[in-house]
Length: 563
Image (cartoon, rainbow, N blue to C red; front, side, top):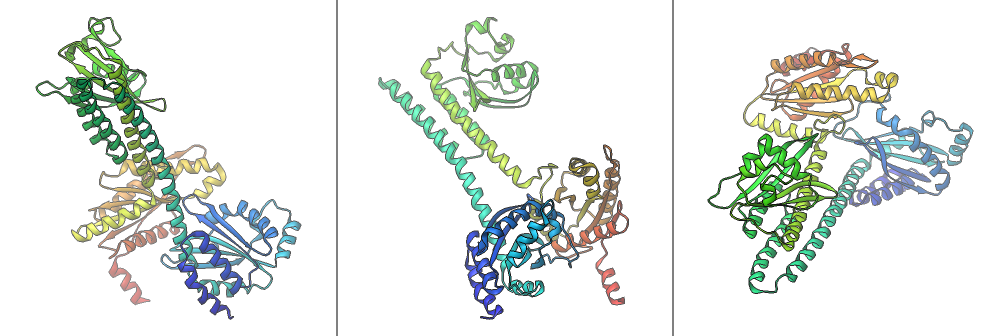
């Protein structure tokens, strides 16, 4: 069968495959039939981590080929992350296939005679870089004695939707992995919650000997079920906590029920959070905890690892807590129950009675402790959810937004600007000479330079601006409702601030900046970015450490007419 017919015959199979392993197998079959390849290695490139992830090796010469693939994996990641070559620029929309004979200079610290013998036994070995929308998706290594020349191979492989299929399948694979991780976390929480429910139900069953106690325990049982369901079904922790303290307070008939949380900072506390239920007709005590004496009470309460009752001895000055603060609360008895999760105290429940000195039974303390355990799960669940949301949109090195969140925000802000006829400006910032810093002073110095730019952008931007690290040493600053003159002035101020940053041993850093504006320079969000990117290129080629503004529509049209 002719090569082109082979390509056409396998296109439908590649596009119909969903799983990544299926797509890889189809691509190997395509290479075997269309290129007469004897062995194929498909190596998926993770652009976020700048490393290879999933991989499969196929073919008749699998033993020798596997050794060559291992050598390639050990040497090629750093090369690919910064490789530009002498090829034409990649398309931002279309798939690209680039085929080269395997570059042996990449495989450093390897016995050359052994390497040449290995390749000679395999025949020809090509490196096929697969790009989709301008980004590297995978590297395919093909080996065989009857492979066409690289240019013909590139033409043949470009006829099949290899890039689209690999990109789609890899994205699905990543989503499946993330779903499995999340499912595992939630199943763990479900198991712990179920265990707590069983313990609570047993406790309730043991103390329902008399009818009056039985009715009271039924109310408490409903409370346990409610908290357990809230833990499983909601990540809106404030709503869960507010209703929980109210239900605990009404169920146990106390005057007040509070949840106290704070961040420890040495001998003091900060970031105080107080949720309070008050029995009708009583005054609130919440604001008292924000005073100095109240903060000290919270610090002492959060140091307790087991339930602690407050009785007449404490109110007479012979106890652990400040008697002046207890008298200001006007209580006659109280109970503090810590919220503990994995040896970490997340907060404390504080139940108060102002009418009589309550004798807290072991059963009461045990039940409230079980409720506190459920509440601890809810708090940790909410914190994990918030942490995952932050990680999904935040760059780990600089703390600013990442590329994914920038792309989403760019589309949203552009549509808003277009709908309300408002200006929207974009500044792209690129650190100068990062490679020189890395090569001469190490990657830690390079990372420090990148972090410094992120800090300058955060400190110099407005609350309405959107700062993101687009990738590598490149940052984006999106400026809603900002004209081009103001954007250019801000860019120049940023350039000066960056130029004042000093990296130990290296000295002052610098950056090049490109600025574009809607509607002055573009009609689409994509053009807004490409115009700023083109202006950045002019700043880099014009000597660096400067600001360049994109050309207006009319200026570009006139220039094209003159040419």
